[in-house]
Every structure is written in C-alpha cells, then in structure tokens.
Length: 265
Image 1: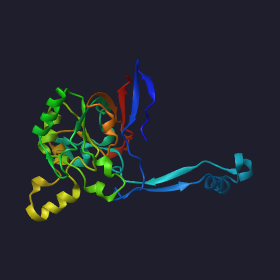
Image 2: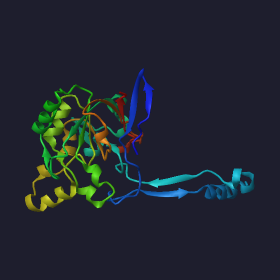
Image 3: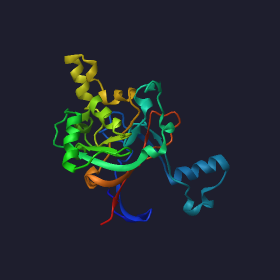
Image 4: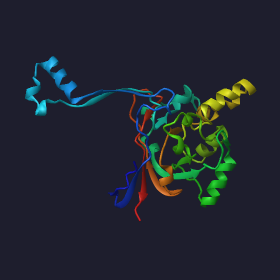
C-alpha cells in the first residue's frame, strides 16, 4: 500500500512513498522468511509459567503479541554492504553494513526506467547515459540511482526470481566513479537474474559473466538496494530517498524500510 500522506519535513511538505516490500513468506524468495507468531494468549500463558501471573490479572486475560523471525538479511527490501561482495574492497577490508557512513543512505533519487529492456539484458554505461540525457540530468555525488525494471508486476510469483535486466561491472563503476554510493533496483538482484547467470555457465564457462555487478564492489565501495517497489510513484528527478539499514553487527546486508520523499504539489 502506498502512503500518500503529506507531512512537513525540514520546512517542506512532502508525500511519503513506501518503496519497501514486506518481510513475508513468498514464492518470490527461493529461501523465504519464516515467521513464528506469538499470540496474545500465548504471551499470557508464558507469563503465568515464568512469573506465576494469572491471566485473570491481565486486561482481557491477554498479554502482548509478538513474532520470532528467521530470515536472510537479503530477504525482502534490503541493502547489500561491500562485505557481501568480497572480504576486501579498494584494497582494504570491506565494510560491513554497520560500518557504512549514515550519509550514504539519504540523498536525491534519480529513477531510470529500464522496463523496456528485456529480461537478461546487460545494462551498459551507454544505456545509462542515454536515459540521463532524456532527463537532461547530470549525476552529482551523493545521488542515489534507482532502476525500474518492471519487476513489480510479477512480485508474489516464482517468476520474480528470474525477471528483469541488470547491471554489469562497467555500469556500476561508471556510476560509482560519478560519486554514486547507493544503487537500487526493483528486481531480485542488481545483477541479471541468477537463474540466467547459472544457466549461461554451462554454455560459456566465462567468469566475467558471473555476478559482475556485485563483484564490482571489489574495485569500488558501494551499496545496492534490491527488491524495491513503487518506483513508478517517484518522479525521475526531484525526490529524496531515505534507506537506512538495520544495524546488524558485522552484517553483509540488512533490511531497510526505504521511503521516497516527493515534494507536495
């Protein structure tokens, strides 16, 4: 659901656009999260067992609801840290998600619509340049570039895992060298689909075809956001994105409630 509420933020009225998917069991995830739900009644019984507090002492005889979640830090909408790609980046120990400067996760959003490109297409720097030219926009350091592949249409199906175009090393390095530190996509991966990469290995056995966007992180420090949603609700230029990750100690990635701020009116 898109939150269209207008709020005042830093002296400006903005609409809040939810760009995050729920953390939930779904066939779109090869390893879906598992959520164990603790009911209000369960909690009341637990307190009686632990502390001897009878349920009759509680409002309506009930305690607190809760959940126990078992999930990959790369499930749902999340950020990948440089440590995810390799143990080193730029010749030094790669940063984990809790070590990345907070200013990386707030910036002007540039949304590039690549939904016209077929699944499996490898996005090159020239493709990015052409779309930026159409927007009459020049990338400035700190901007966050988001790719709208059209994967929204197949979320909730098994097709999502194998859907969409993706970036390669050259496209990632092109953006990072312009000062972009966070790159996002609404697809399952910033790379081309995993099943396609895996199937190609049997034919080509070419290491350069293997997750070249991710492995670009060995040469340059950068983060990527995967499994975004509602990118079509953002203007191509002019919105702000907030994508602060959960502070997982030593994490290769972490979930994020990504929000777009669109100037009202």
